[in-house]
Amino acid sequence: MKSATNVATEPLHDLEEWDEFLAGRYKQGKSEAEFRQYDAVATPGVAEFYRLNHKFQTVDYVLGKEKEYFGLNKGEKSIWEAAEFLNTLVDDSDPDTDLTQIEHLLQTSEAIRKDGHLKWFVLAGFIHDLGKVLCLWGEPQWGVVGDTFPVGCAYSDQIVFPEYFRANPDFDVPEYQTKYGIYEPNCGLSNVHMSFGHDGYIGEVMKNYLPEEALYMLRYHSFYSAHRHDAYRHLMSKHDIEMFEWVNKFNPYDLYSKGHVKPDVAAIKPYYDDLFAEFFPAKIAW
Ligand code: FE
Ligand code: FE
Image (cartoon, rainbow, N blue to C red; front, side, top):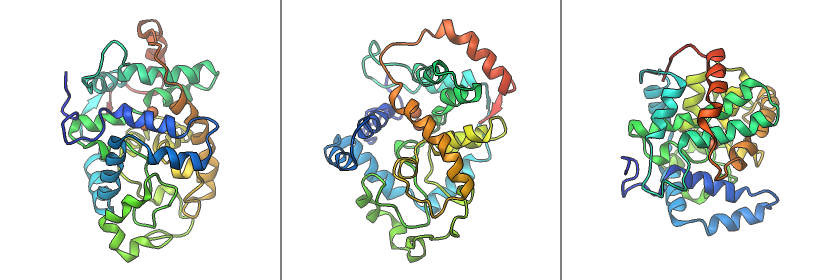
């Protein structure tokens, strides 16, 4: 079955293609120089995806999407309903070898659980990509996945394919191209507008239910220039820097827990039923 997001105008075959690009880019033991090389030979679909992402994620676009989605007016769903909804985001690749979205989420959360982490950390593993439901509400791939970055200030050259920012209309707004741009030094990330995508959105959905450490994991898990390359420290508060330890703890589970062994969903479902019941009411606003 083809989903609405898998139309000819979308550069990625499916959203997993971006996740696979990241896993390749940040393969354990790779040097910075090797990332660059890897990026240069990245599949054309990924390069085209970043070209669109860097061109269209403007301050105006981000403020508009925050207004549209951060009010959480897309209806109420339980966590399982949201996960089942995300599962309808299917592509036309081989159903026998590909994992469903729920299976991907469970691989992340089960890897965290096996390492003996606290329940909210396991929960963050399951939930972190549920914001990809944005695709099902008609958002383009470049507005749902991809590395996130602050808008309204100079772009870090640690962001993948930085040369594509030249086509962003904000590149010609001098106020947006200084080091601090529209922000104050070390103002804290809660005051910074990040490029719009599944991270910031799921952070809003979860903000009344999860501890702050988990919310940092959700909100900043695709902010690779900051958590992998230490960029944007001049906008971060001392508190952000402390909390980024948790983002860093989370990242390996996101990148490296995906295998091709299907989790036994029926067997582990009761654990997750209890976990969701502990943190959430029956349904929450999306
Ligand atoms: Fe993600
Ligand atoms: Fe993920």
